[in-house]
Length: 176
Image (cartoon, rainbow, N blue to C red; front, side, top):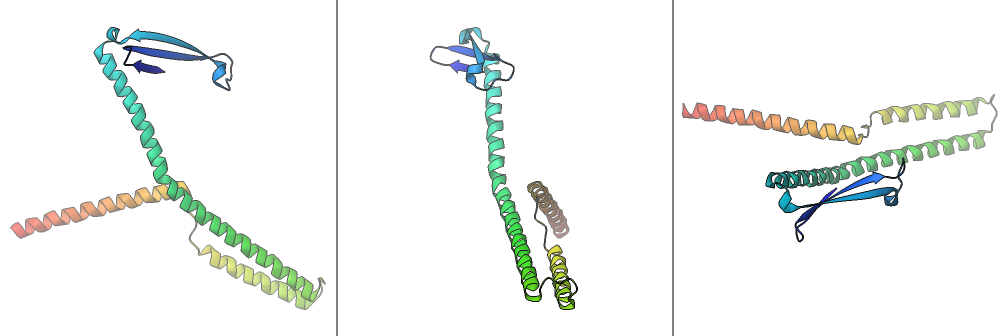
């Protein structure tokens, strides 16, 4: 870690060395400081240090900004997934209740044709409901959403390039 003290005109280099194999807190490190006067450091090295520090700060800001930009998409996808899970759970609860009602209404006799027919009818209804559910659009995984968004952006750029080429061709035809 490097710190530049403008008031005193010196640069303090700190090296942290762990005192144990797997340090858990700041107490588990030994700090060694090395102080160098700024006048002893070449100006090119000053510039390089500031450049590297700026790049590190910029990289951190870019990463945080990208994460903040992607967060609403992640939240939207998670909310959609939760809604589908909730609907699925509610459908399962409704199915269990209807099966319990059939069993209570007709009794639990495996040889009873009315009970078997009611259960078969309920099974057919469940299969039809599952077939309808298959036609629902799948929820998007956050990475899939990012890939889809990048593909959409590429398609938009390609469309803009095609329109630009057509515009140039039309202008050329009008000038001729």
